[in-house]
Each structure stands twice: as C-alpha cells, then as structure tokens.
Image (cartoon, rainbow, N blue to C red; front, side, top):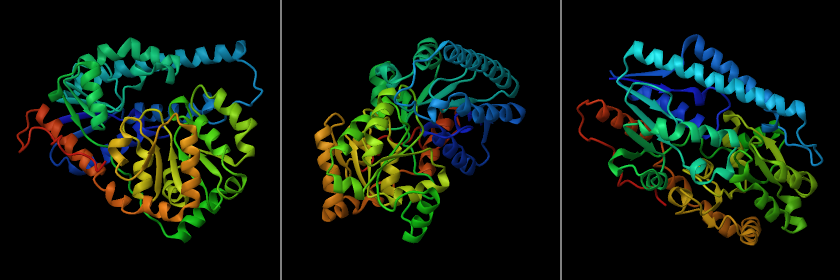
Length: 410
C-alpha cells in the first residue's frame, strides 16, 4: 500500500490543521510497518514551499500586529499590495496542483490523503479530513478570498473523494447532514494531545514565564484572534471584573492576529490593554505547556469549533477550563469544563470572578481532568487513520473501519 499525504499545512507557523498534519504523519510513519506513507511536497519543492511559508507573515503584517486604534483605511498602494499577494497565492496554488498531478501519475499511489479539507487535483482515490464546515455555514467569519476559494473548489474537489475523516462526532454529523454524505463514508478520528502537554514542576513553569516576560498569575485565552474566536466579548466581560481582580490576574491573549480584527483591536487599544489585558502573540511549542500550566484557568469563548484543541490541552496539563458550549467542545471536554453560552457576557464575567476567588471550585474544575482527556492521543488517531487507508486500499485487516461507537468522556 502506497499513500501520499499533503503536508503543506505543516510547513509554516502551525495552527490547528498544521499540528494535525505534523502529528499524524509522525505517528503514521511509526505505525505503518511495510506500508509506504509518503509526503508531498518533498525535495526542492518542499524547500520552496517552506520559504514561502516563512515569508508569509512579513507579507501579511496584520496577522502579527494589530492595526492602531486610529489606523487609516487601506490606500491605493495597500489595495494593490493585497491584490498582488492574492494573485501570487493563486498562481502558487495552480503550480502546486499541476506538480502534484504529475507526481501522482509518476509514482502511482494507491491513495491520496488531504489533511486540509480541499484536496489538490488528482486522479488518485482521495480521502480528505474535514475539520469543520464553518466556511460553508458561517462565511461571515472568514476572509473573502477564503470564501471565494471554497466557492470555486470545495464542491468539485470534495465531490470526488471516496471517503472522509472528521475530527469529532459533531463534525461527522455536520458532514453527513450538510453535505449529504452517506454515514458509512465518514469516519470519526479524534485529534490528539501533543507530546509534552502535561503537568510541569512549578520551577520549570516559573523559568519559562520569566523568559517570556510574563506575570506569575493570569487567565489564559489561546487561539488566533479573529471573529469566530469571540475575543471582543471576552475582553468586555473581563473588563467588567472588579479592579482588584484585574490587578492581580491579567488576561493573557496568546495567538497571532487574524483577519477582520479592527473592532477587536480598537477595543484592545482603547480599553482592554489599560485594564489588564495583555497580548503575547504566537508562542512556539517548546514554551506552550508551561504557558498552559501557569494559567489559573483557560477561557475559551469560541462561537464554533470542529474539535477545540486548547481546552483539551489545558486539561492535559491539569488546568481548569471555562469554555463555550459551541460545537464539539461539549463533546470533548464537556464532562469537566464549565460550559457557557458564548453570547452571555454577564455569565462569562461571573464565571471568571468565581474561578479567581473560589479556590474550592477551581480545585474541583481541575480534579480528574487529565484522565478525562487521556483518550485523545495522536497514536490512536494514526491507528484509526491507517485502518481507513487499508480498508480503502483493499488490505486485509480485522476491522473494516474504526469503531465509531467510541466517544470522548464528554
């Protein structure tokens, strides 16, 4: 069996899909045995793709630096620059697609796995991973060029897939109901927890926080800053806390700035950063476990999640979680997290006050959380994925597909 996996999502700064691709490939290579798991791109094309990924943050400065509160509207040169970036990106996608079709024809793969939703053009039998359907169901949460890309390519490319992976039962049901896919063609393979995510000694945490210039106590919100993550509501709720609590417990935002952040940045500059909100930006994997461990609690107010990795990883580190009851979060950590309506600002304010003041409740939220998320491993995700590969390729095995009756503790 020869399978090719598109690894492009793992070549730049990694967010959710990049981590999924990287961890899945690591475990697939460890478990594949005589089966061949190859990656695309490789060689020179990979190096060029990595260079483009490294250059992207400098071309899209707003992803890492919020616009000032009094920033001007985009001028002529800004618009020309944005148009040029879009044109280069589209040309790059077309060239990568042509090269991939050539590689597949030459190497004669049995199966192509696309980890990032929309597959590249190919004559290979194709399997794709669906992380969520937010672009289709809530296009207002996404940049116009991303929505346009989906409108041009999603139905055609996904329509030729022979099977689908979904990262939660919530997402699996949305794929079945929204896209009209037969249930037997959609297999749930939960995401996993990255290596190193666990409780750490206090001295280790303190040293990392010192290196990063962070306070010794804080509330943590982790994720790309964009409309879907509901950060403005969270900042408003936090700014309603009593002065003495905000003085002792800042709210730390960890994540790059995404798109459509003007309203969020305006509130951050005019109100939030003067009232205890700190923006750290992107944090590399080597420091992330310590940042989780140092937090009093993770606050995760997202409006929609296909899986929701930060709450799961916070629990793996032994931490308390306040999370929205949106999407798959109920399924993954609902057994132990304190769940809230993402639109109820007053409820979020009260929950933050309680988790900061009520030590007994804080300890209860932390009790047993590591065990709750133990089923989420990348090794299990890879084993379930390999089972699907082998079934689709006609390789004999005890089970045809992973047991979808398995559910998370939530």
